Amino acid sequence: MCGIFGYAGETRDAREAVLEGLQRLEYRGYDSWGIGVVSNGSISVDKHVGLVGNDAGVLPRSHIGIGHTRWATHGKVTNENAHPHYASDRSFALAHNGIVENAPALKSSLQKDGFTFISETDTEVIVRLIERRMRKAKTLSEAIRLSFKDLEGRNTIIVLAQDGDIIAARNGSPLVLGIGTSSEIYLSSDVFSCAPHVKSILVLDNGEMVTVRNRVISLSKIATGRTVKPVFEKNLLKDVTVSKGSYDHYMLKEIYEAPFVIRQVVKESDAKYLALARAIKRARRVYAIGSGTAGAAAAQMAFYLRLYGHIDAKELIGAEAYEYKSLIGKGDVLIAPSQSGETADVLEVLELAHARKATIATFVNMPGSMMTRLSDHKFMANAGPEICVMSTKIFVSQIAWGYLVAKAAEGKLAEGKRNLKKLATETEKLLANKKFVAEVRSHASRLAHKEHLYLLGKGQNLQIIREGMVKIIEGSYVHAHAIPAGDLKHYAITLMAPGVSVITAVSNDEVRASVLNAIHEVRARGASVFGIAPQTDENFDEFLAVPDTKETSAILNIIPLQLLAYYMAVELDHNVDKPRNIAKSVTVK
Image 1 (spheres, rainbow, N blue to C red):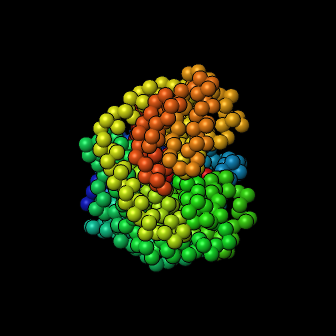
Image 2 (cartoon, rainbow, N blue to C red):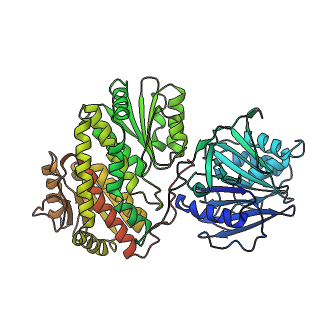
Image 3 (cartoon, rainbow, N blue to C red):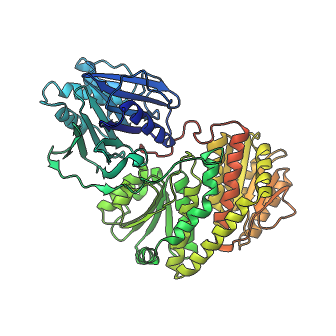
């Protein structure tokens, strides 16, 4: 979602440094952006609706600046609502990531005190709070600290002062500080955005704030103002490059990286898998939790744990886990897959679980995340940056990892690793098959112009067709509906009629006959069926052959669905890597 960036140094023009940082934050999703710099004791701000541009030349040259990419929550997508927001006297400018949950009450109080508002944002409430605190506070830093304590919700802010100070505070939404090779300072919502330029990073914890003055860092606790010693970590992403290479879009490149990410999962040490398996087997309860695509991955993990590990695992959607909060406690294991490791609604549940001494296992792709820091069993995807807002390779990585954890719980870790190695090879061959890819593209050009699409699946493919639905909706903006094959006759059969298109993924497993029965039922009512399977069936109107990889069949089946969604978006001439309205890293509830 929103991205924060800051720079203070002597080696780079702040305009260019911040602009580059915002460009590297684009993958998080946004709809407007802005940059603020300080020069000769004066702050200048430039804000725009739309994509981050390539030039911040309207601003004066500077060595200190902040920037922001906004994903609208409070207020429309306008220049006025974009960040940074000025103080009334322009003595500072502020950018914000999060939602101030008590903004209406705070705004009413401020208005009674005579403060006026220019924007529709909750962010401006923070600005005015600081201004009110400045009436008594001795320093801007103290006013910020006291104002931040008044905020409810998950919020992170960055403030640029006219004297060149940068002050940032965190409670929930991510914030990292990086030290450059020439002692320049970077602040950002993630490591990736400043990775090429920093040698070490500081991940701020909730309840911490940092002041950068003349490139000297002061870290303190928001609750007390007490100064604490910063603990830096090595930047593990410094040498990671980002490029589409010969591909037209990042999404296509990332789909083709599926074999690589599967092999990365296999490379993880047996000891770590076995340690997690032991914790799962002795747990009182096991929950797999995620949101969006990671929610489908969590559900697939729970399925694998039930099927192979014989574990009574329950899947949870982060934002819908409210009724479980009173049940989670010591003796439970929570398993959380996440690309960013900063998903707000999942973090809220994990923080509660951590406080109650539950065991937490995480599988994350971004180093230094809050989820990893909360975790007892820390696994990294090591999949490389995923730039397209629509997740593809990370989903493959997550469900491959979930499968291997389940096989470890079953006592068959070595067999699981052999199966994944075979899967990686078969996936590589499939993606190299130009005829296969051409077939997918042909189906996509036809299906992209349908008003509605339905997907059928069961067993190991239920969450796969659900994720296929998510990808189609995200990229093509076509209405798609994933239906459990066995549940079809209970409600969705009413939608089946001539002209209706149904997509199904079928594996050679114990539920194959049940899925084919559902296909008979939809075809009997005139719907047409596009089947993805190792072998055809007389009731497939269209058929796409995929290899039979047995236990890992579902993981392979997501590949043609991802390709289908990609080529549908291309057919419709949509912005494939940055679909409208959605964000990759959802750091607010």
